[in-house]
Structure formats: structure tokens, C-alpha cells
Image (cartoon, rainbow, N blue to C red; front, side, top):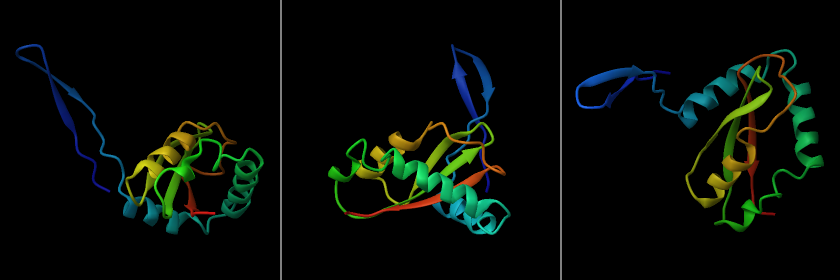
Length: 125
């Protein structure tokens, strides 16, 4: 994954270097998921997350299914900070953006390794 650097122009003639990272692509995150889903602790943590998700009805709490139609395939990126740092989806529509808002920033149990990638496929019920 290649991440660019960005520079911002501040004032009239002062450049300030600031790291600016492009969001990872769906394909990049999918590759990380493929590599990590066989690591020790993956299945147990994923299963706990699914139980947590189902218990609190996270997939339905913001009425995301009412937005657009069709499936949304997404990857949740969980870090050692015990939070869903970002969500990457295979499409960009109102439904996908709604799910991103629902899951991004969600406090969770610390994963056994980081980044921990969880694949969720949201389909019409």
C-alpha cells in the first residue's frame, strides 16, 4: 500500500508539511483481511464481535437499510486502541455511508493483534 504525503499552503508564502494519508482501498484492506483471518485469535475475536453487534443491533440501529438498496460489503479496521478506526466499503452510496457512521469510532474490546480486520456483508433482510 503506497501512501502519499501532502503539503498545505498556509498564509501567503509559508508551506507546512503535514502527513496526509489516502484512505486504504477496498482491495488493500481485503488483502490484509485475507492475510490475517488465519492468525491465532482471529476467529474467537470475530465471533465475539458478531455477538456484540447482534446484541446491540448495531446493523439496524441507525436504519441504514432504509437507505438505497442492495448489499454493502465492508471491512472494519480495529486497532489496539480498542476502537473501530475506520470502515472501508465496496461502494459509496447513502447506505454505505450510514454504516460507516454507525461503526467508525465504535469502542470495542482490544483485538489480539492490530490492525484487526472484520468483514461484514450487509444485505437486505
